Length: 503
Image 1 (cartoon, rainbow, N blue to C red):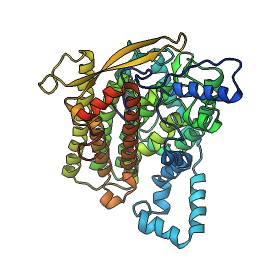
Image 2 (image 1 turned 45 degrees about the horizontal axis):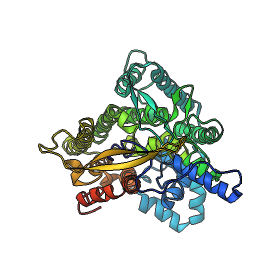
Image 3 (image 1 turned 120 degrees about the horizontal axis):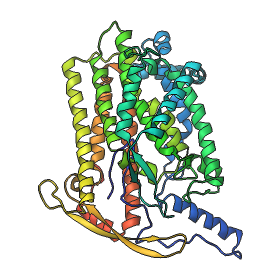
Image 4 (image 1 turned 135 degrees about the vertical axis):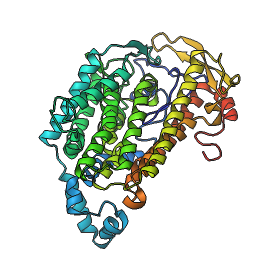
């Protein structure tokens, strides 16, 4: 049964082969031609992706975005900087009458200006030191915080990833340390607004680090993989973008969890608080209620993420998407750049929302967060009790689906079962929790008051909407392959992917 968080992703109880799929073999005889060997390589590579259509060839629009993303992240960091607000005071809030009209009048000058602006955002000593320190603290906590050992789904190769479940402890302790080390705490090592102050230089450094790090991951997955869930597609471009390894580790450190969760989500969570403080000091100790409630809601949302972190470790980002540029660079750079854009924008361009208006949008966002959590919780209880529970006060409807797994080492097949919940939130739509996710995201962006500040603060919500629609489609394809006729029966019970009557 699928479902889950997302910046994030979609969940599956087990990752294996599917009842209706074609049987694929992983060995070839020495007498096969080079062409057959190439096909065998591709077969093995596809096994590593767990039979999900993904990567650069699956969605050309996301592929185009990926190519432009590094430069776009630099532009967005400059767009929300103090320098931009000083040199072009109203340009960011007037993207059509200001930016677009200027580009139409003189395209050549516009292109030169955009390129020079993006290239002006370079790594700084302050930004680099902050990011390395931020990662260092996260690394220490990752190594030494206690927790219960949990496992992810078994892969096709028989690998079962293990994790220390200490996400909530990490979240609470990291927040305390960030506060205590600032001028608001007792250490006074840095200003609490440091994330905003160092942002352009930090993003520039993360860009360079992310690109080099993904080159390392590409090489490691081919030559020194941590598990058998690895391999090359035969294309360096695809290998680099999509990844060559599913579960890379170094000295026991799970690189995907560290980057995706312990760095990326923690940075996003604390960034809103830092931006709110910098806005407060920049505008004469005046509170911007739009930014305040946006930062508070996102903090709660990401606390929920750490509460549900083991669920994320069973999501598409982890069990399907390899550790390549798409995921790892995305979490290192795209999340800090885009997922904080609507909050960061308000530091220089206050929302001017009243307390009441901002509070109303805050309630709407928290409603989305709570309902998203309740949907995840509903599914988790259903799984834990093997369907022996009540859903919305009634006996739940579900499909008992059979599927086949194949041991790559022995070639032996075995049949297993999963229960596909079709009641409660999961009876409304297959990914109704995505609607709640989007409810929160659009609320945060509306707290930036786009009616006054223009459409740029809406970029995150628009991007997330497109991303979740794509994820729902990928999830459906995967489940059709895994469960075959059983999933078709499930789709008859729950025909819509995200929103009933719409999609």
